[in-house]
Length: 349
Image (cartoon, rainbow, N blue to C red; front, side, top):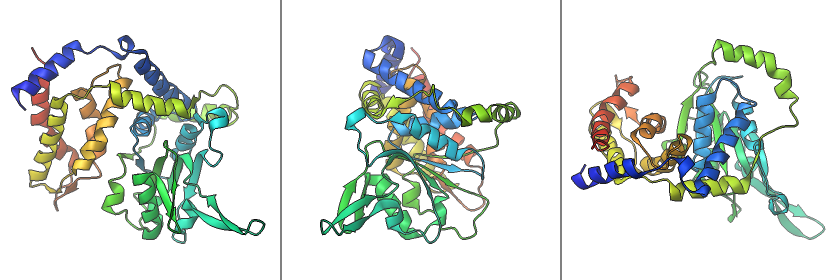
């Protein structure tokens, strides 16, 4: 890290104000984030960390891969997030719905998820029938159980927000967000996700059982949450898009933060315990997520705290360890230590 970047980051830490003291647009963006969190928490109990990461990914224009077990609440989480986002009145696209669930199976075809042209005998023309990918939030359940051909269709949708059917390209909604799941214990009849598709997921989250008190709350309130039809907290699609754009333009990322990320990546690639390091693209995808995390913590600048929170989630499924090495957490901590200490020293005057 250069002395200029260190001094610049130190000045930034001193001069930056909190979100509550900054412009109205950033305050509104923070309000949208907290409304989304509150809305999902009405339906999902004991998963505060997963809810926060899912909403960070949504606003950062990423996708989430959940490793879980049946009955862990993944459908409830995805549905609650989808229903928290409503269309903008008459401007809403009728082909786009808040939430869709796709149950992936080995016999699934690409047209089952993207849509298919249907012939209309009255007009003698083909009309495109939209598939379940045309939604704000898509739950891709057991995504590793489908064939590589369907996974390729998902790769285009997740990477470019479009689907191609019969050489015609159809754009997906700007808010398109995938929550995919896979069962890490049941590998029979599965097709492991290729590295390029794994790289499309911003976070890979391993969900554990919720604690005792949260589980008791689930049992005590299941009827109330099941029958809830009024009092839902919602935000509009346009508000979510506006929040994304505001955070991107208003939250500052110091050159010193970017230097720390590059140094961590280079350390990992040179570590003998790492067979394959992370790509540059992973760092690019991380930047908007760091900005969202900063806003959730009341800041208009990215700090070391945000890196420590999100970097393990971003790199966990991108780093391939050498044979015989299993402690990914230790490898990450060892390679983060030097750059993070340098970054911390840059904040001291």
